[in-house]
Image 1 (tube, each protein chain N blue to C red):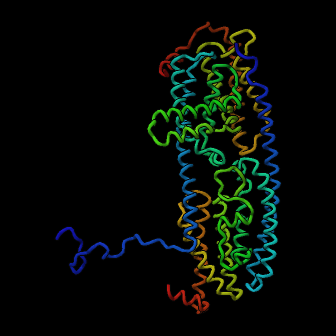
Image 2 (image 1 turned 90 degrees about the horizontal axis):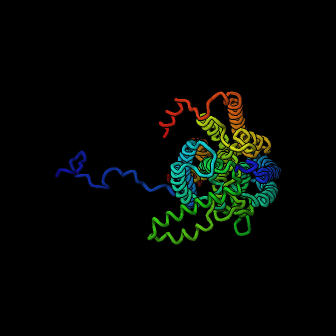
Image 3 (image 1 turned 45 degrees about the vertical axis):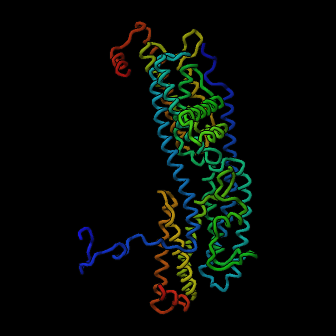
Length: 294
Length: 245
């Protein structure tokens, strides 16, 4: 007879006999159905935001890794070192898969609804503009960057279709992917380019420390990175203040000003003392750091 | 070799134009929202008279409120027309507060028995659904497939929370005015609405913060009903339902 709970009189307690379990039916009233409908809508919204937030964090992390790889480049030239190019390509492939998952959720009205969960785009712009700068020494325009990002989405969709060929959903997503777009906003672009100035400053510092000359300016009349930083600085100073949270704009502008000044100090140092340093001379601490980095 | 310029001048011009346009849009929205806010706060002012108006005189007060609401509807129409030309959620934050307040004036007026139509005569205790609020303002609600002006679920729910607060005040004041039945009616309504809000899975946001306040309104009105029942002041009908519980 073991295995049963008994009451004080020794009678076996059967399920449903004792005090009622907590699962009493929820109180319903005239408004309950309406609130249940609203609940489902709100749940869908919150779930979507959580999903986007998660993917966004991953894209941000990957973008930062791309930037780290690019910081190992020493010169502005059309061909990146193959190992770095390889790292960038594989990370971009990962980014494109994440973007392909995110894109369907941010079409149309949802683009701005979830704009605050899409911080990653700013980071991605930073990585892509930096990549473009290192190869061409120009700032890629918003208009030219938008199709590049949308192309990443298409590649990601294609990659996921290859992986799940048999999935019944595949044909449907193929149809949708035609119109899928991330729709990079001016904010994404501008805030990303603001951060680009920081990366350019870092690049100018390491590359000049290691090569003994300023990046760019290989020919007599060519621009070097000091001039580029000045141009970017003036670019932001001249733009009218953008609507939205003013503090972000001002903070980023202030950081940009500091970066510009760091690079111009660099230019001055090289001009004045650079000639005293034998060409190709590399300080020891930098070379060990370089090895550790690799 | 490196191109002559880092930045294509066309890029700067484009961004500058976009920013200037954006600023113009914001200014126009601000103007339209100011307009709406003025009409809303006038209507809210009129509605504050319910605390000193006995139910018998609602028939003179409510038409005035409805007139205020008509002005709100005009403002919303103008705002909606302009805002629909731009991404809705980009600028939504600019009008969401006055919009919530506008919704609350409409919901309160309907609850008090105003805004009756031929098919649905006004009666005390009526809760306007989200769709009905949208119809009244002549704008869509909870729009998902199109990027245009609409009323969001959050705005509607926040508007409801505002009237809960207002009604809990009215419960007390109606007793002062000798209308004990009103207090009982409000108590039932607020309890039902409270149960409704508990159905929602709220995140840690403004909606949750405001929804948490409903329980204080419930308690406030419960206390009023308790005071009445202690002194045998509950209306006969309410007494009967009270006994059943």
